[in-house]
Length: 270
Length: 271
Image 1 (cartoon, rainbow over the protein chains, first blue to last red):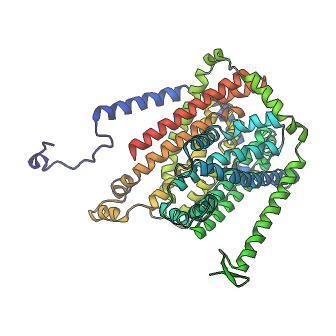
Image 2 (image 1 turned 135 degrees about the horizontal axis):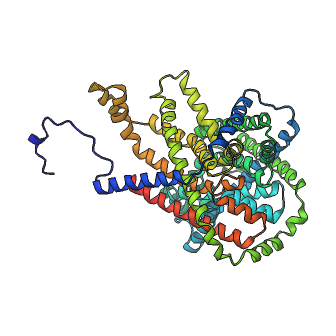
Image 3 (image 1 turned 180 degrees about the horizontal axis):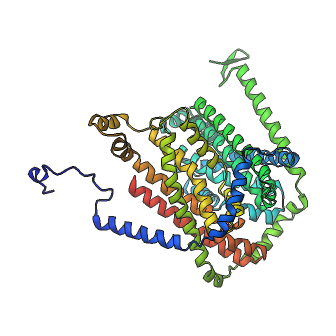
């Protein structure tokens, strides 16, 4: 910088730009603006339809003030039970399967071939959207909560195994080595050297995943995989916004309770 | 330390008797809950279909392969729509998430008693409802199309972005803010020069992260009529055109992988 102090005196300070190179800065800005307007242009909005829809939107918002839990109570209860059941079972099974996969996907524990296989399983599970997996499972296993249960278990594996494997890779080597030095078997080494270190994280992640699985189970019904989604879809199709509002309120409340509980439990284990 | 006396030999245990009993009871309860839940699922399953599943899966796999490559010429527009839904959705979500995050953060909110709870309510309610449900709702309000998908994605993203952002705002270094205030800066100047530079890296990270998630989510919005490549997926599924389905799935997979790669690169460059 060949800027002398004298030339700077009297000129006000200016914030340094986020990207130093001015060509790149302006280039990115122009590209972003052009893209923005192109994308906006490709979105043909039927404003007349939107205008008519606003009335329905107002009715929907108004429905939240008087949600109708009563007239479809049995359907809502059944769908809700199914969602909860799917959430519980799939979380348990997903965690059980993802622990060995997480051990296999940690480079400091597993040999290279096992590592590659486990990482491959994880990336497959993460790349596929739950809904798409659910569609395939429904086609294969038929309608019902079993397809939803399998979908959520499959999705849990990718999520939990990846984060757990990262935690295992970051663990304190010294403790594990100390256990090994006592002449422990491999299983004892995992049980007393590795497991205590990752346990708080495992509990936190499991609770978090329970929360996610519940939220996902609410939409799986749209493709026929069981849960409250089917009831919700029917209510939408009939424009019964009071029932829709009731279901959405239940979902929000359950998610809030789960989040609150997970906050307490995570604070306790850490 | 809990020690068990076995024939005069002291054996070390991890837990004493009572805590061990409590643990067993908890495992037992969890086991029973799981068993009951599983039986409910089992009751509602037609097991004949499940036993038949390997054959069906092989059958579908056989039909789906090889993908109909010529169909790809019709996927250009849908994938462009999908990208637009994700990008514009993220953009508008961020426009709304930033003010909400500032209203929700404990150290910047104008009123802890009135405004903060409202902001938190917006965050929780937009976050806990899946974007597919938002899309369903918006399709029934403003009609099917890309616009409904874009609005659904942006509403769903508000809560997510605002939550992460307000946590970042609450964790800022107060000393810097105080230093700016000490120069006699106004409230807005403090915000721009004291708070914003500190949360900018977090903001960029959140934006790219959410964009990546939105790419994944916008691929399925078409299933409920909200535009994007999901529409093609839905119509191919309805006509049982499995070779097209496998091609669409491959395209989605490629899009997701590219999205993840781009977001990882950008995050690496910023942070």
